[in-house]
Image (cartoon, rainbow, N blue to C red; front, side, top):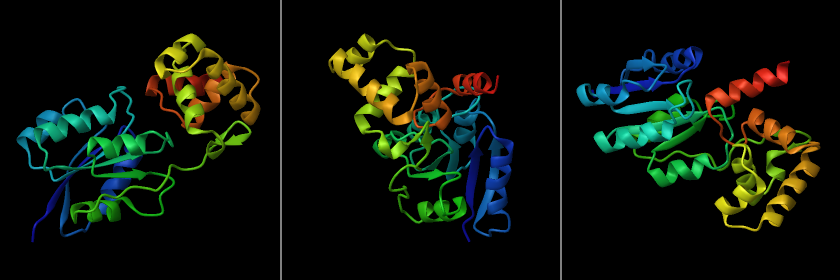
Length: 221
């Protein structure tokens, strides 16, 4: 019987242990590596047999999981990749699909276990959720914010001015102002800074691990 070799990359030790626990006692799966950083992943897959990688999108060393997934696929295109996250960033599902990542799984929101997703992936399926989890952004739900508003919000949370947002998205500056005003009205935020903080803490737009921790600290002061 073939035993699939599993590699787990997640900066949260509890998450790694939980993932590994799912595979305990599985005759056709064995965990060959667990790590909280991507620093040695490329070298490991070059020198060891790995059939499937379970990898978080955002990690403490601020290396984007998508970047590492692309590198793994370039080195060993036969390796299956299951991307996991607890953040409901709406753009990640399509990004993963477009990159050829095999499956995508939300840690807290999915009703299906990671073991089930991996097994379906190894059977040749591409397993993706239909939509990201619904979360609160201030007084609104993420589903109340339009796709274009989220595009504006994603750039705004980097600290960009309205003019810079307009240039990056190819829209008028007044349109940017309108989108931000509408989002503030929906969420009940009184400033764009408060809106950016709410967006980052909810996970509805992606930020680096460092920025996420910094804003969580700020909100707890």
